[in-house]
Length: 189
Ligand code: HEM
Ligand code: HEM
Image (cartoon, rainbow, N blue to C red; front, side):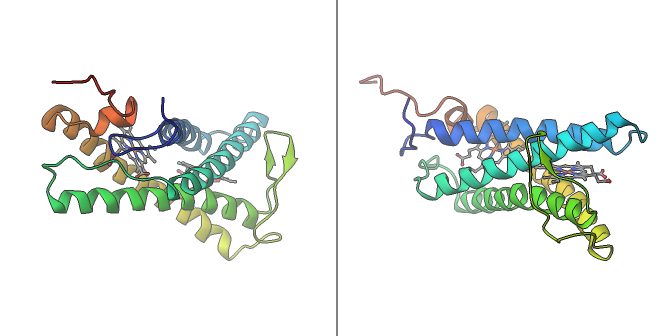
């Protein structure tokens, strides 16, 4: 199983990053949306702490993913793919990268502006971005966190829709090679 991507498909590391981050974001979204509805109990405090720890883990994984991806090549696009679709896919991917970076950063910013603690899974403290309470930027940071999340959901509808369209309608390799990696050469045929 090649670690690096090739002309024929995505390498193992790109796939591990893609699917682990996708799964964590799904878990994170469910926790985020349910925790804000909870009554003020000790459980709420624990769930908030969990949301923040998972969020900071996602941020670290996204940074590692981008650093790795900068040294990778992209597999070739399906030959029949029109130019506008190639451009639309690139723009969507870039926007997805920006959003999965900006969402945890805005959460961190909101948490800092609220002067709330940030302890990674109860292990160690992470620094504040604002150095204390910031009542002016606090509501703006929260609005940003919520709006960016809404944008991510909208873009994911397009992204997942495109992946399924490639797989079931175009019947090309685009989804398969993100799941399984490059197809092995069978020699002949
Ligand atoms: C990819 C990572 C993240 C995702 C997808 C995410 C998603 C969400 C969602 C959907 C909500 C509910 C918003 C609402 O309806 O009001 C939320 C709230 C919240 N998030 Fe995140 N979040 C992420 C990372 C973070 C990080 C890293 C932190 C802090 C270090 C954080 C802190 C918070 C806080 C404090 C709230 C509660 C806001 C309130 O009191 O209304 N989030 N997040
Ligand atoms: C939170 C969820 C997700 C995020 C943030 C996300 C993000 C991304 C990003 C940034 C890329 C570009 C990869 C690169 O060029 O380095 C990508 C590629 C891809 N994603 Fe996702 N993705 C998510 C979920 C999904 C799901 C659920 C599917 C399938 C149903 C999917 C299918 C694909 C495929 C097939 C590619 C490769 C596209 C190509 O070869 O051009 N993604 N994804």
